[in-house]
Image: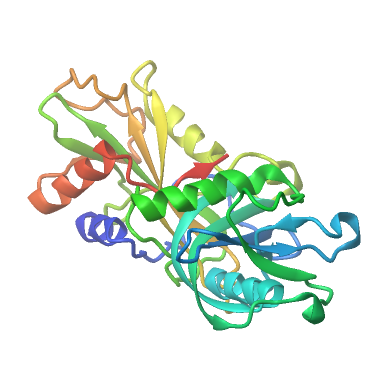
Length: 322
């Protein structure tokens, strides 16, 4: 079972979220509710054949006349991709197709932003004659001329990341898997590499063996905490120091559906971490676990093993900015 789960996640697909979790606040678990206890923001970087970036001019009073990437809040009932496509159409006039997630930003469970690389597929570029409450106009921009006043410079790294990805992809094309999830949670691929170069993966031992899933709290005190808090807590309980050194590598992908507001507004992030000092594999076995709720699994199936090691060696993951 764990082998099939890992195989699908490495392929950029999803795996059903269990009804019981391996760590996190005690039940009952409060579901994620868009516009009530969490906010999802989508953003898109579109490039043309000249490597110019699609930007839009803000109509909102507080930032009127400044320029920004097409972006906005998700609405209940949307998938993440649908929200991104709607925002691009409303603010620029163009239709688009998502290519991959470029990055995910988080400020705890209260605010999450999903940045996509996309390509235009139709529509007409918005002009001043089309100005409305969504935006004044849109244009293609080479980031040099003319000099545009930006609403905020936080978009510059994502424009650069899109150009870098187009020139040399740093991870496989990755889009959200459309699978329902009621809570905001993290499925953990925690990997220890031994002295022979073999990967060992941490598994939850309850029920059938599986990659651990930790749920994030949605109570007001927990909303501002980082998305990774529950993961660090689980690993600190499992691993003895100093063997418990943990490095978050990034995302294999994420899962969301959103078609049943209040029941499936949650997201499952498939997160990769490595255990121990990277490049210093001096131990024949992973550290002994301090909890019987978990166990180590040595990945011996050659195809899965090689894919895990390849992704680790090339840091081939969607970046997670905390």
